[in-house]
Amino acid sequence: MDKNFDCMNSETLYGDNYYPSVILIGNTPYDYLKAFVDYLKNTSFPHKKVHFIDGMITTINAVITLSNEVLQRDTFFLRTKTLNQDRIENFFQLVKKKGGNNRNPSVAEIKQNFEHLMFA
Image (cartoon, rainbow, N blue to C red; front, side):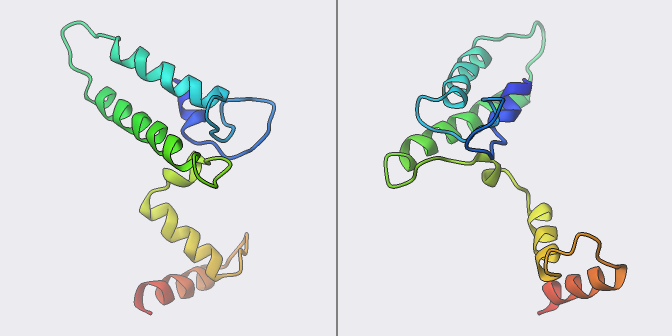
């Protein structure tokens, strides 16, 4: 499961660990995701339906399909980290950028940036 989360949160082109590397058709993360979907489809839990498995299969299949489409064009690789950020994380990333990527903003600076994004 850890390798799956690494593949679905990939960012680097090269690294010591292959799984959080970007997706290229035929590379380790790409092949692992395809194999992991097969594993999930063949896994059964006695007396229970585990609902998140269907969602995970759908998500992984979407990443594989997107990879197949995008990587056949001019794109060299796919960073899956950019696909799974939620709206709150994106908003706070904008708040941070508004302050010039200040790593230690004051409460007043955060409030000002927040208000500007919410009401501008």
